[in-house]
Amino acid sequence: MLRFRWFLPLLTFFLVLSSLPSLAAPQPKNSPVSYKRVVINGVRAYVVTVDLNCRRISLVPQSSNGHYKSFRRFIRESQPVAAINGTFFDPATATIICNLMSGGKLLSEGRVGHSLRIDSQNRAQLVSTAGTPGRSLMKLSDWAFGMSSGPTLLRGGNYTLTPWREGFRDPGLFGMAPRSAIGITKYNKLVLVSVRKPVRLQRLAWMMKSLGAKDALNLDGGSSTALYYKGYFVARPRRMLTNIVAVYLRPVDTAAPVVSQPPTAPVYDNAAALPVALVPSPAEAPLDPDYAAPLPGEPAPEPTPVPY
Image (cartoon, rainbow, N blue to C red; front, top):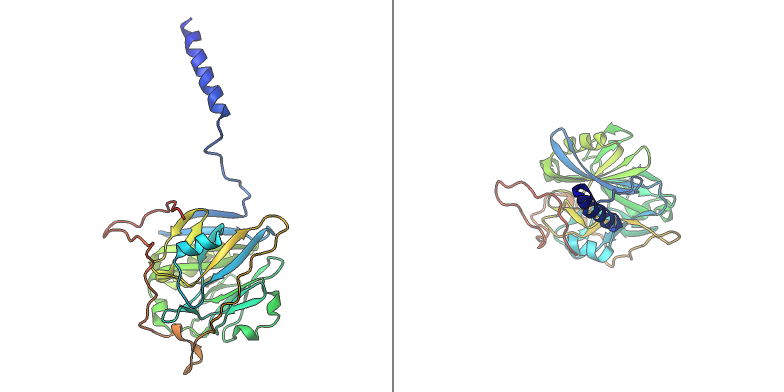
């Protein structure tokens, strides 16, 4: 009789529990956009993987060329699935100083670094464009997405760090700093990587190869290092930004979103014919008010949900 009295409440509990929605349901294993944290030789990397073989995926550069935005505002306005900070800009004028393309349109122009190109079939490749302004690129209409940055970290699975050949002059680029990078795997996947611990470019290249990238570009890291994934601000930049790379998972049979042509023209250094921000400059981008720095001696916080 005692056993029976315990059995009825226990049965009722399991029946109620089975009727509730599963709060800990596992994420789909074949999701085309996924996130993970990995430790590579003692350095933690935050990695978003984007499977370009899924035709619903699109990459769109979100640009505010000529003025600054906080990373949170970029995310709130563009509503991507994931995003990473983009390419270089002149901190004095907030002008993007590298080639940036979307849907066959040239959004900004520069002459430094090589370019990540994605065509209308979602095929990604690294294209040699150093020294070539965007208007001179052949068949620009075939560029569904394009962004030049650098220095190039990997090319065809081999390490390659020749920043001077790509037009980079600022020695501050080569020291220890938090980093962002984007890479292409041999399976046509992108890896968007944020490293919050200061590292050198050589270490970043080694980490990108360890993550399976065959081609990889350094992005505008340092105080611009930013990464977002599905409601989580994984890395928040110290300073305001002018562009991000946004990842979208489109509904079936919808066109890729395209940003409009910015009104301002690129700014170049007349003496060296190079964008002005790639030589040392005392100017700095304004601080991002959303950034919360850890206390002295306190480790950087782990990713936490931040409401829009």
